[in-house]
Length: 95
Ligand SMILES: C[C@H](O)[C@H](O)[C@H]1CNC2=NC(N)=NC(=O)C2=N1
Image 1 (cartoon, rainbow, N blue to C red):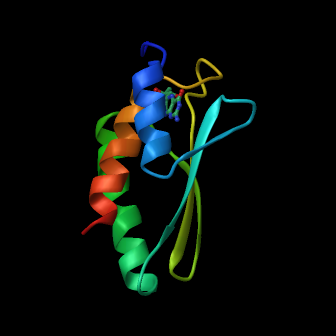
Image 2 (cartoon, helix red, strand yellow):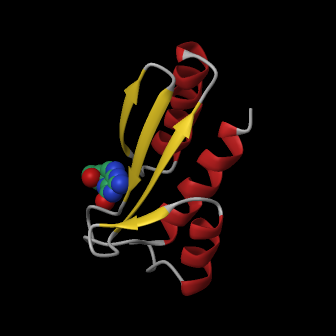
């Protein structure tokens, strides 16, 4: 089971544009890309890490936008895995 997210990890995610949601039990962010193919490529690359880490985003894609929500369903809150996946998605979004 993953440790709860630390205050530092939470603050770093917020600094990178993530927003706390669901009374602080989730992180949300909207990623905008130049087109659908780039948006879907981001989702594809992110999915490989999500599967590798067995930690999956709740997300929605509309054309060149990907709305992402991260939370740890097993604990009903935010854990280190959410912070880790958020960092990875921010890296992958940079291309
Ligand atoms: C059985 C499986 O390992 C669990 O359901 C995993 C799958 N992916 C997951 N993803 C997320 N975001 N939270 C979880 O608690 C979680 N649990």
